Image (cartoon, rainbow over all chains, first blue to last red; front, side):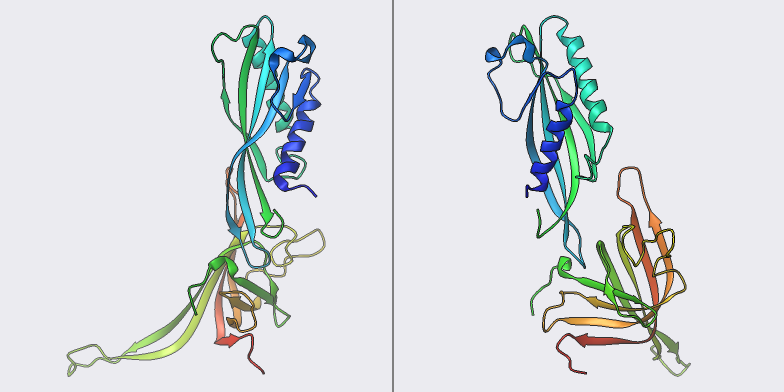
Length: 142
Length: 144
């Protein structure tokens, strides 16, 4: 059985995969220059920082976790800024359809959108969406 | 005995004289013993003279609301086990239920139950009770 953390991020990937306009979603970084043009918009999902603390006790000790998931988006070609905005909106809309991520978490919210362009990125346009996921779990079953 | 972590605590409540069962999702509890006093100071005294009178106790239990809890949750057919005005029996274990654990028990009247929620937080509940009778100081290895 996968951990709550892995189950949540796998679900996020699955949800993004179901967005028709997103062509390729991966869990590992890829060399963008090796992807075909048909692979864009491309999304790379990675789990990031997480804070955990005790939430409640008595029957089972339950802990609360706030986990960040970074959704890296890469678009290709003309109108990069417009493409980027369109895809970011599509991703947020999809994830907000069920903020419990299929009962895997208490809530998820989009916390931040960062535009990450390093040097001359043409023809690529990149952005990162940080979503924060709060979930509870039993101490004996992380 | 060393310091204890609050997270090891166990809170049990039973309706009426029924068996006390664990309350889920507790975040904190309090148990306060009090006594009333009688002031018998007279003009001959240079300091206040106080007599202890009726003893009592009261407490609160706070936690995250969960509809599946038999204590505070309900469904279309059944009300919560614990409602304002009900008599309950409780057991509070500050350091868990290990073989030699100490705990407090007693009977009480529920004086209030509140539920609260805000847009950026979990739904919470708070139970307040006033004790009736004596507060018992017990240990899990006590033999009746």
